[in-house]
Amino acid sequence: MTESVRQEQEYGTLYLVATPIGNLKDITLRALETLQSVDTIACEDTRRTLILLRHYKIEKPLVSLHDHNERARTAELLKRLKEKRSVALVSDGGTPLLSDPGWWLTQQALKEEIPVTWIPGATAFVGGLVLSGLAVEPFVFEGFLPMKAGARTRRLQALKDQTRTVVLYESPHRLLKLLQEIQSVLGEAPIACARELTKVFEEVFRGTVSQAIDHFTQHPPRGEFVIVVKPTAKDD
Image (cartoon, rainbow, N blue to C red; front, side):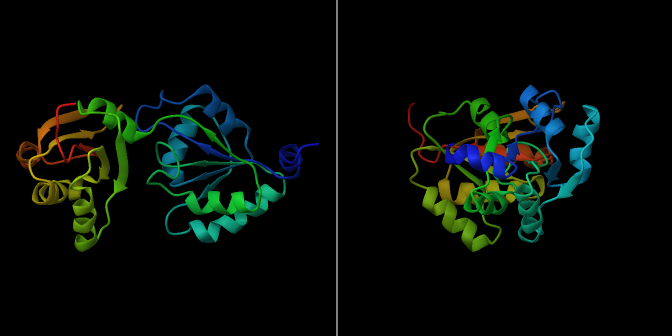
């Protein structure tokens, strides 16, 4: 008997399940089968996850796992896994761990040699990247920049001479500030700002940084944003 087979029999499996970022139809059959079969679903916000589960008539025990309780909640979930109970981890939308909770739980499960697997699906930054009109290869995903102004500026300065396309996340109430910071550090770089991906009001703005600032000054930002920028623009 191989070690991997022994572990699968000894412990439950932690499934990292990607869920839709907007349109509820953007879920895989395998994800639905997994959510239907596991013993527990750990989710960032139970209210958001219930919308998805009720849509597909799935009833499972839910456990909240978010940025503020992940370390405390991990011990409980590891205990369930060691009791041969399976756990699915989902975020509010997209792939867990990518700018979402789950990294600590996953790391501890791996340290305990608990089986961990991934159920593929939607990821917001991929949608923003392919819709941007900018070079998609090579790219670097930065997620959310640091909250503190000094740290944000230092991170942008580190990206100034980046030849790869840079992908960021930002919330609507901080978008204009981020664009102004990008303009200050990176200058008039080509940029795309994608919001509400897969939803009714999906929008992708493409232009220069100053044009983006003008646009979102006149049209107040709404929805979560994927920002795609080419710091050192060259003919691709």
